[in-house]
View 1 (cartoon, rainbow, N blue to C red):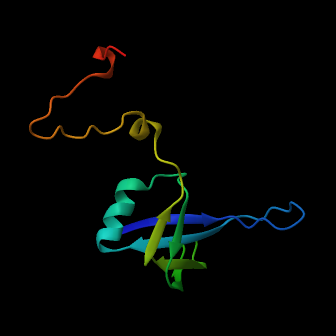
View 2: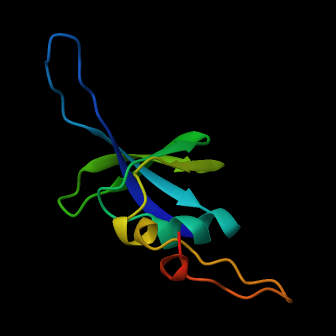
Length: 107
């Protein structure tokens, strides 16, 4: 299981900004493993799943509410890291062939 917080912008027409709405997201199984591996603070994602409201008592004795999502699907929106794209993966050379470097070609 992986849990993380997700902020949703509440911008209104006319440029009026409201504070973001925060959701606590839980992802289970393989989806949880993928989220734990690839999500970091500041990365953008879309989460699909049912929303529920829970309440708890804060340290000061007040009642607080939490919006919780059980993720059925998570789509990663942030681009991949530059380091991942910088080096393309090399394909293995099939049997019976010799690898040739482009710079050694006479043309």
